[in-house]
Length: 166
Image (cartoon, rainbow, N blue to C red; front, side, top):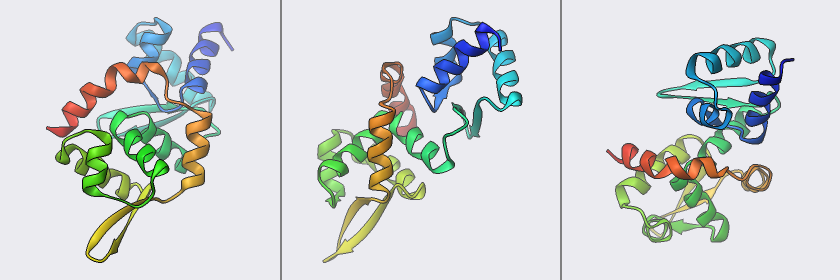
C-alpha cells in the first residue's frame, strides 16, 4: 500500500464518519487526487463508504451499520448535545432538551425526529407528557469513549445546524 493510501486510511481510522472535505483538509490533497485514492481504498475494501442524501461519510471496515448511525449523530453538534443530555439525565421532555442544548425548538425538533427515526432515541408518554430515552445506551457510551468527535467537526457543525434549520 502506498504512503498516500496509508495516510488517508489513518485519517479515516482516527475519524470514523469523516466527510470528503474534512479528509481533503486533513490530508492536504486536492479533490481529484483524493477522489482517486478513496475509490482505490473502497475497491480494496480497506474503507467503507456510506452515501446518503447530500453527504458521503467514510468509515473503517470494522464499523457496523448500527455503529455508523451513532457515529454520524455524534459528529454533529446538536445531535451530540441531545444524546449527551439524555446520558446525563434520562427521560427528559422536549422543553427540557431545548433548554439543555440551547437551540431553537425547531432545530431541536428536527434533530430529535432524525434521532428517533434512526432508532437512537425512543419516546415514552407518561401522563400526557412525552419523554425521551436513548435506545442503545451501552453502544452510545462505548462510541463516545472510543471515538470522541475530532476538533475538525467543531468548525463546521454550527454552519450545518444553521443550514439544516432552514
